[in-house]
Image 1 (cartoon, rainbow, N blue to C red):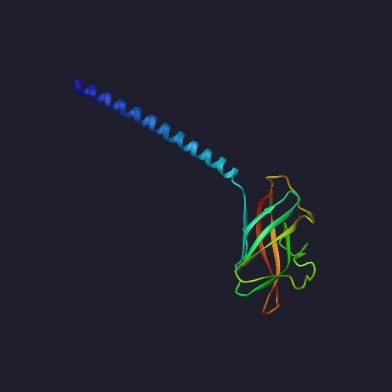
Image 2: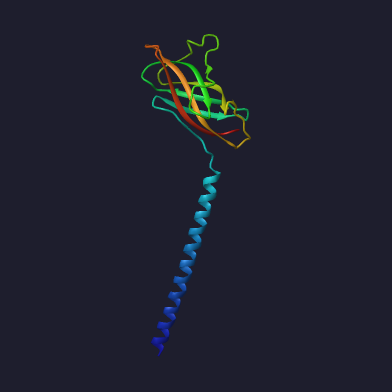
Length: 164
């Protein structure tokens, strides 16, 4: 009789542990899921994806739509950046010369060096503006010529950033 009674107590203890074990596992999983959902939404959405030969080192956008961007160029030749544009659609509208005195010459950027510039961004044909924390998603277009060939080229980079 004592063996049966001890067996029932052991079985009862195991059922207790299994029931509470599953409950703790489900609650822990729910907490992790909620934390991940909250955490993903609170992360800043920042990305600047440029084609091969170009990288965004640093960038930020002011409330008035002025983008301050530092571009690293790693093409195999020195280049002259002649104009830059920033819009919500990929295109060459609203391009701004980088060298106001001599727009055709542009700004010389040697191999593996960077250049900082400010450019006004546009959305739907007007100046892009936003409240701090709101998101701007668009394109950065860079017109340049290779120093040796003087052949004009344009590259486009995808930009997503928060207004500051």
